[in-house]
Image (cartoon, rainbow, N blue to C red; front, top):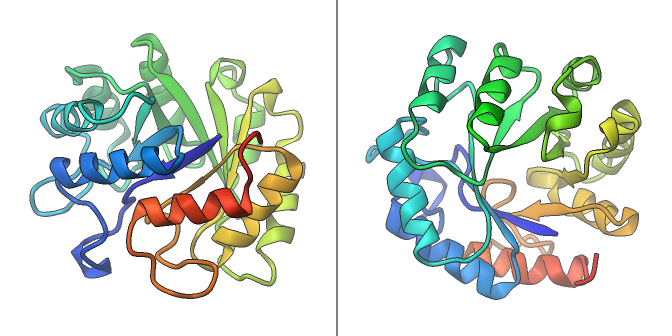
Length: 239
């Protein structure tokens, strides 16, 4: 599986290719799916470009994207969008339109409570386990581990020279991951080396402007669709 991560916490400062409005996200998602992406991860945003868990913002984003693509669509629940764990849980419980899945970063305060709220509402949980954090250890102790949809193994090492080794270390920390599917991905300079490793290991992966603004050549990517097209060269279909 190749998931497209449309925008992340990026802003207008990262260039016009990063989709920020519901309409731009929907257009970008449609192009990426046409290019071969089979799942969508998106950060709903306020009109001023800030990540938001507001039910109104989440609903507008999901409705716009679902009108254009037939694949599952997921959102973030990152603490940067709402630092107070109790408020984050309240936001999830107040969503009027539900995503197919939502990522929960296991090293963040309140991760278990947020994940539990999602599961209670029938939303799949992507357990975000970041390298360089205690996320893997916390996930290994979690009673919710067997219930998550999949594990997002996120390599935060952005060095092209060392990201693959960091990815292997993270996978070793995760161990069996409760038998749940693992999606392995990197970011910035580490994005393409980690994606290639995922291909060699037969793991799901993701690509998009959230994770990298550049093609493997170092050229600036013009769109999420271009990144997906390139990813399928690096990560052949059938993986």
